[in-house]
Length: 173
Image (tube, rainbow, N blue to C red; front, side, top):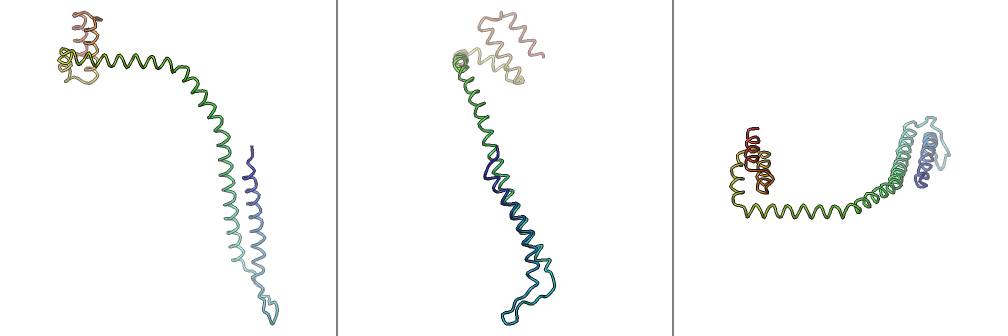
């Protein structure tokens, strides 16, 4: 949809271009005439091209200014129209998030409780701290893997033999 203000500014710019063209020619011709009160009009006979070009340049820059403002207004109008589409998309995304929010809250609660119990288990288990100290010279990924392996072993997921075998494999890798 066209913006009325931008359209009017483009018309004004066209009129400024036209007026500058005509005004430049007229001013170039008029500057060659000199009027005296007691003698009347005297024609020098030379057309003032410099003045004509100066008026043309001034008119061109003025018209260009109006065209630029019209273009800026038109672009802002288009952005405003398109923002309603973006608003609709954001609203739809928010609705989808609301549907998943209850599931996310329960998952977050489980994760938080797991983390809290994990840290409280670590603080209470001195053996865990000692084992973690053994792994401090290894790269971070090995430390994390060995720590998780030990945690699983303590929960009873792995037997002592499985734990030692996996630990050996990770350390040698």
